[in-house]
Image (cartoon, rainbow, N blue to C red):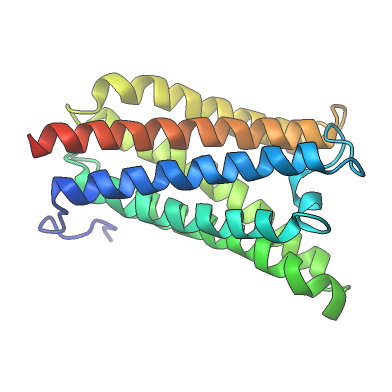
Length: 215
C-alpha cells in the first residue's frame, strides 16, 4: 500500500517561502529561549542537566511555549517539503514521522506543565514516552527526507550533505541512549543542536528554492 499523497497536492512557491520563513523564525525563537534559560538559571548545571529540566521553574513557561511553537513549525515544514518535492521517492512517510515527532515534543512541553503536580507517578512515563518518540521519529524522518530529496534534481547538491548529517544525528542519538559515560545534559543538547542545524538548513534551502521557483 502506497503512502504517497496525490500528485495534485501542490502549494504555490510563495506559500513554501512563507512556511520556510516561519520555520526559521520559530527555530530562532527556540534557540534564543533555550540559550537564555541556560544563562538565566544558575540553579542547574547545564552540562549535567537535560533541557527538559529547564521546563520547570523560572522561564519554564517560556521554554514550554517555544517547544510548542517549534513543534507547529516542524509540522508545517514537513508538509511544505512534501508538497514541494519532485522526487520519484516522494512519500508521506517522512511528513508523518515529522508530525509524530512534533506531537511528542508537544507532549513533553504540555505534560511537564501540569502532570508533575496532578499525577506525579504518571508524569515520568508520559515525559519519557513523549521525549523518546520525538527524538526517534525526527531522526528517522530526517534520514527519509534527505533520501527523498537526493532524487530531486533541484535539491540533489544539498541533499547529499544533509543525508550524511542525518546519519550523524542518528548515530549520536543512539550513542546518547546507550553510552552512559558522558554528561547527560551535554549529550542530549548535542543531539538537539545537530537536529536544529538540519532543520535550519532545510528551511533555508526551501526558502531559496521557493524564491527561485517564484521567479
